[in-house]
Image (tube, rainbow, N blue to C red; front, side, top):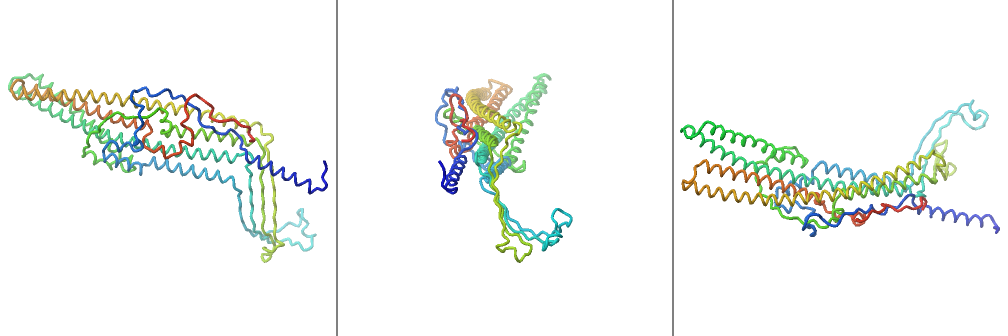
Length: 505
C-alpha cells in the first residue's frame, strides 16, 4: 500500500502515536493493591457470654462509669494532651506530603526577568572585531517563562500518590490509637487515685484499731495483767501497719501528678483531687461483639493495613523506573538589547523540547530496588498479620483478667460481709461482757483488713475494665472512618495482599 501524499501518510501515524500514549498513560506499573492478607481469627471468644453486640457507648465508654470528674478529665486530655497534638501535627505533615506528591501530575512553570551587562572577548571563538555592527559591550534584556512536564506514562506518580494517601490514612489511624491510649491512661490514673484513697481510709481505720489495742495492752501491763512481750507485740503490729501508709499516700499523689501531665498542664494541676472522694464504680459484664469486629475498631490494625497498601504502591514507583520517561520542556518570552524594544514582536523567543530518557543500563540497580520494595511489602504484610493476632490476644487477655477480677471482687465482698457480721456479733458480746476489749479490737482489725482487701481488689478490677475497653478499641468512633472502603475486615484463610499485573498496564 502506498500513500498519495506525505500529509495523508503522516495523519495515521500521528493518530497512532497519540492513541498509544493515551493507552500507556492509562496503565500503572507494579501490582494493584487488593486488600490485606486474610488472617484466621478462630471461631469465637474463649470466654463465655461475650459474643453479644458491643455497647453503642464504646467510643465514649468512660461516660458509662457515672463519674463527672472522670468525664471532665478525659475531655480535657483529649483536647490538650501533647501526645495527641503531636499526632495531629503528623497528620498535617502527611497531608502536605500527599499534596506535594500529587503535584507531580501537573507541569511546573517558572517566570523570570533579567538584565545582563557583558563584554565579549575579541580573541574568543566569536570574532567580535570582524563582525560589522556587533558591539563588544552589550546589555541584554530578557523576560519570559520556562515550563516542564513529565508525562506519567507508566503511573509512577499515580503509585506515589496512592502510597502517600495510604500513609496519610495510617497517620490518622495512629492518632486514633493515641486517643484511645490517652483516654485509657487518664481513666487508669484516676481510678488508681480513687482506689488508693479508699485503701488509705481502710488502712488508717486498721491502724486506729491497732493503736487502741496497743493502748489497752499498755494499760494492762501497767496494771500487772500483761507481760512486756505483749506490749512489744502490739506495738510491732501498730508500727508495721503505720509504715504502709506513706506508700499508699505516695501512690495517690503520683496518680494525681500524672493526671496533670496527661492533661497537658503542670503536674500539680489535679492535686486537689486528693482532698475529694468519689463513689465506687459498679462493675458488670461487658458485651464485646464478635472477634472479627476487633479488626474494624482497633486503629493499630487499620494503620498496619494502610502501611501495607503504601508498600504495595512503592513497588509500582520502583517498577516504573524500568521504562522510558517522556518529558516536555518549553520556554518563551522576549529578549532585546534595547529595553524599549523588549516587548516588540521581533523580540519574541520560543522553544519546545520533547525528551525521552530511558535507563537502558544501570548495573541492575532498578531491579534491586524493586526486589527491596517487594521485601518491604512482605514485611508490612507480616506486620499486619501480627497486629491482628496481637489485637485478638490483647482482647482475650483483657476479657479473662476482667472476668476473673469481677469474680475476685465478688469473693472479697463476701468476705467483707462476713467480717462485718462477725464484728457486729463481737460488739454485742462485748456489750454483754462475754469478751474482752482486746477480742473486740481483734475482730475490728479483721474487718479493716477485709475492707482494705476489698478496696484493692475493686481498684484492680476497675483498671482491668479500662484495659478491656482499650483492647476492644474503645475511645474513638470507628464507624466515622472509612473502614468499609479499606477492606481490612476481611479475615479467614491466608491470601495474597495484592494482584500482580504486567508493569506496563
